[in-house]
Image 1 (cartoon, rainbow, N blue to C red):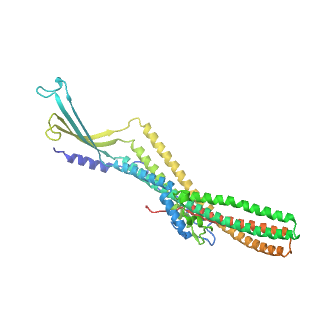
Image 2 (image 1 turned 60 degrees about the vertical axis):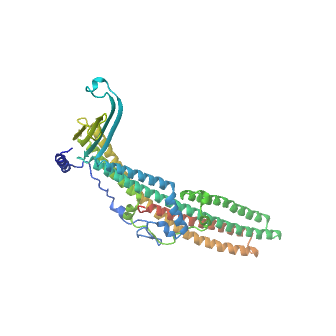
Image 3 (image 1 turned 90 degrees about the vertical axis):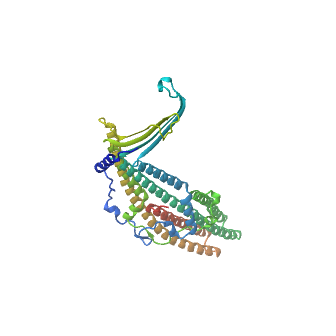
Length: 470
């Protein structure tokens, strides 16, 4: 059997030449020039305007932390959910691309039975088998870009899903580092509190010995005992805080609490980058933050959907063809049985009542307008978070520096007062005040060290991150 393919090819060529894509083309929204400039808070010896590094947690030079982050990126449940959503978006994109290809279908049926005498010619068997088969091909001529805009929207959705996954990775890595910092700084605070407790116990023994010799009053011993017990009471809360951080760290890295490495539990000092942190500028930030990039891709997707809806205002033409056969009795299905074929266009058009189509167009335009507002808000929020994190980090460093000087002075005063008390040069009340001041100074400095470490993590979180396709 022959088909006359020249007229069909000519029709396809003509429709390709006259095809157009309706709807607006996406243009990335502009951001104010001021948003691309340097940061207000990028000042100080520990901050530079160099471009941030991708794997920022490696600035800590801590192999244990590097291993935890790698485990979290591989096994964290939130990351796994984000990756599954990428796969879903990729499958949707594949489905949209398939609409640009010819659609094929095969139908076949077979039966055995008996028909009435009036349904067959004289001499033919009334009882036997019947086989029917059909192969159909359909191709939508994308005159107005409905299919092309659908592919464009699915592509943007897929890219937005990838950026969403990067945003999840930023959060997961920051949470892992923060939990690690929390556990280590809690251990350091416990050590500080334990040293203060030992110092108070020593002072209590000295005061009690002087009381037994009649050199101090019983009230002096009671006051030191009360201060020592108060210091001891603060330690269990710190232990509980450290345990909670360790359990949270195990969950973030996809582990049960008891499976956390011993090296994590052994860390007893607060991690500190201890070097200049590169933060870049506003332009680098907006090109780096995955939430900003995801918002731009969602705007692109909904802009393309305006074109998908607009294309429904115009006729939809599908070119189709089919080959079919019917076989009765012992006739071969693809042999001597009857064979038929057909080819031709099909027109589908919602006309003249197009209010439903225009309603969908307006809905798509409203979605795009909302996406533009969300993009602008995401840009402003990214700048706000980064400036806030820079200010918090800079001032946390200043506070830690001042408290370090205060703690050193309190330690010298406590040492002097303890020596003078043992020689009977000052009373127990003065020594008690010096011990209380030192305990408070040590606790405040440990808390300031913790605040600096948390401020570092918040700054890295605000700066975002980037990962390869893997």
